[in-house]
Image 1 (cartoon, rainbow, N blue to C red):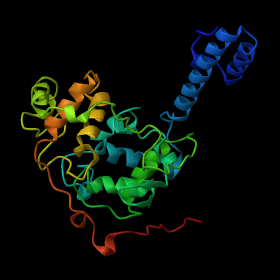
Image 2 (image 1 turned 45 degrees about the horizontal axis):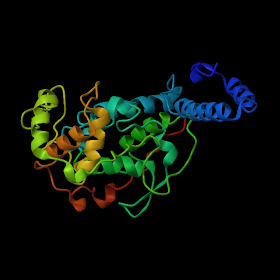
Image 3 (image 1 turned 30 degrees about the horizontal axis):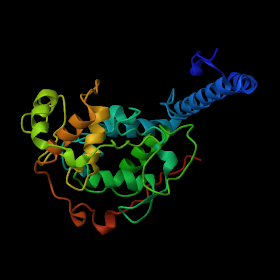
Image 4 (image 1 turned 180 degrees about the vertical axis):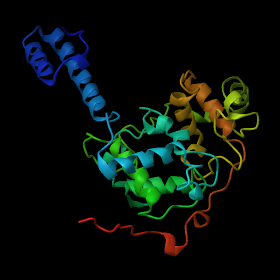
Length: 294
């Protein structure tokens, strides 16, 4: 019974199993109880952080789908393209449109906001977080708060948080499935080793000079993220590579991930200057209402 898949048990069955284990032999009962509790927590998290089965009905569902379309094709979608300054899309980092459970996952993310942001030194909303990515990861201009772009993308991310328990993050502006940093000595990251590894694992999709191909986005140069983006940090990029690359079959060791990150980030990329990425004062925010049909 203990080895039966926890996902196959109902909440009532898990409760009954825990009750029974409380009266078994002490040590075996304790060990089994720990297993059940850990598995139950994992199942609960999985149930709370999964892609919903369907879009909401009516206009809300249409906005969710609009946000999804922009996440998947940010640099070319007619609404988001004017705010993008390179060839990256949201899904370039947030794999599978943010539905990948580890690589920049959007699952459950909305439940962490509003959150404290050490970088901005203030509490920010999910909308703020999304718009800041346009300035850094996409080396573009911050879309207006309340704009169609801003509302649609945050609505999509919120939809991917359906069922998640609200737990605002008081430490960082990160969701419950945020990227886990590798526990290694980052001083040992070696760009020369990374160059060889890049040729083996990355070059076919991202190009000899990091310029990108039809199969992968640019990873350095003017068409990639600027040096204000999170992935411009070797530890952040290395930790992301570990769970994300090669696409569909992440197989790099911790050290290989660190070495490739050191190599990629040793190249030139645009320099981030906040004032160059902010819109004009009159475009910081918008109020978009529609005539009521009632």
